[in-house]
Length: 319
Image (tube, rainbow, N blue to C red; front, top):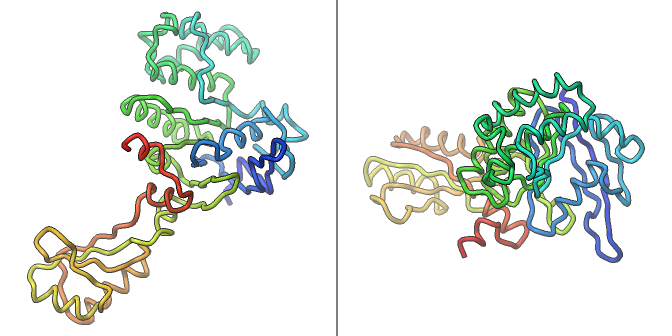
C-alpha cells in the first residue's frame, strides 16, 4: 500500500468576498511528482502557502507527512522544503556562502554544512561558480542554487511553486532533470505548480487541473488526454483495396485522413486498450491486414483549453 505524503479534504480559502479555493481535495503519494496545473489566479500559490503553513486555511482537513497542518506546524516544517516563484538567494553572497547560510539556519554542525555544500554544488553543476557572487549567476544557475538551498534541511516533501517561470528552454529542461533526480535518487515527494503544459506532461505522475478555485480534473497525463474528444486510431494500409474493405467493416465513423498517400484511416477512440482491441479484433475477423496502427490522443493543451476555457502560457506566447 502506497502511503500519502500530502492529503487535503475540503480545502477552502477566501479573502473577503473573493473565494480562492472552493473545497478542493488532494492526495499525493510518497515518492511521486504531483503537478497542480492552472492559469494565473487559479489558486495554485495559495494552495502551496497553506500546505507549507505560511497561511491558514479557512476550512478543511490537511496533513503533510502525517502531520496536521493546522495543529502541528513545526512537525510539517521539519519535513518540507519550499522553492517559490522568486529565488530566495542572497545575491551578495557566493553560491557556497548561500549554502553555508542555510546550514546555519538549520542548525547543522559546521563540518556537516561544508561537506553538504560541496556535495550539492556538484549535484547542481555549480562547482565552477561556487565562489562567485550569486549576482553574477544566470537565471538557470540562480534557480539551481535555490533548489540546492532547499535540500540543505534534507526535506522529504518539496514544494516547487512555478520553478521554471522565466527560464529559457535549455535551463528549464536542466531543472526538469534535477527534479526527476530528486525523486529517483533521493525518494522525495515533489509538489509542483506550473502553468507549463509540457512541464506537467514531462514530470508529473499525476496532474490536477485547478481553475477558479476548484479541481476540474485529475489523473495521469494519459487519463486527462482521454477526457477530450478527438482521439483516434490511425490505421495504415498497403493498397486501396485493403483500405476500402476496412472502411466498410469499421463503418461510417472511419474516415480517410487528409494528406499523405490516402491510405490511412482514422477511427474515433478514447485512447484506451479496449477500443484498440475492438478495432484489431474486427480487422482480424475480416482478414484485413494493416500496415501499421497508432493511437493518437489530444494533448494537454487541448485538455487545458477545454477544461478552463483559457489558453496556456505557451499558447499565449505564440499568439
